[in-house]
Length: 53
Image 1 (cartoon, rainbow, N blue to C red):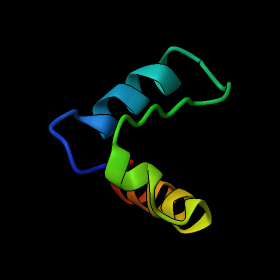
Image 2: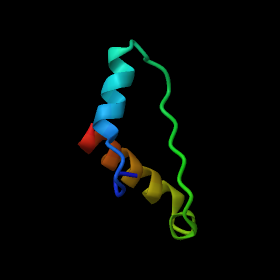
Image 3: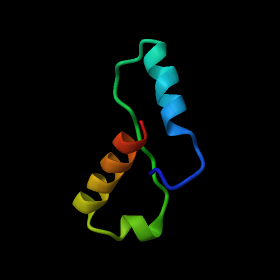
Image 4: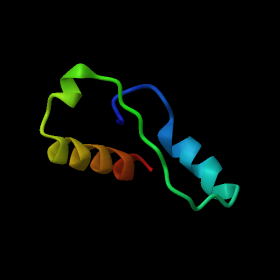
């Protein structure tokens, strides 16, 4: 999360401007990330998402 080319802040801004206040879903398809400690991986996802948005 946050390592690719998708403009996450813009997409999140569109969602918030439209009044969406629900859950955000993150889908990651990566064998190397899935093999990591999942608690550490989740912390990295949250940090990347909140730092960019």
